Image (cartoon, rainbow, N blue to C red; front, top):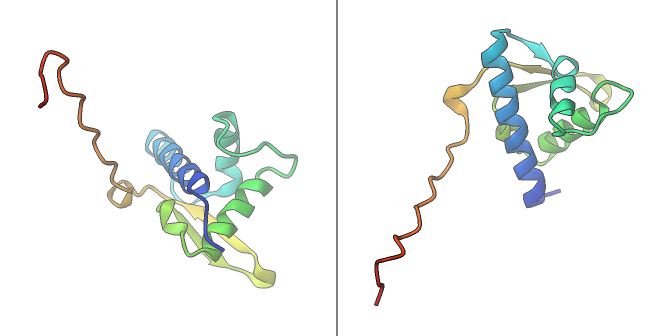
Amino acid sequence: MPLTPAEIQQALRISKAIQEHLENHRTVNVRSEDLYGMLADRKLVERDIERGLHFRLFLRKLVKANMLNLIPQCKAMPRSGGHYEWTFNRAADRMPARKKVDPAPPTDVVIA
């Protein structure tokens, strides 16, 4: 099932937030449950009582769409029953490149 443009943007925002968090805390092999609070505080994932169920369902959706590369910090290790063990590590060298927006032309220049 293909992802919507909104889901792709959400994955990119989540990736950026995770990268910033991992750079600031210098930890390795972080579990999804450990990142959930930070992502929920930034309103990037829905807060729930199961400490990240919606986040893990979103990650599983990315795996099924073969788009987990949108969050390069994430590694999915398959477990039984169609579940995954999610671990996160820094991935600054694998982050998607952002296109620079050209500034608007000066207002005093006439374009013919």
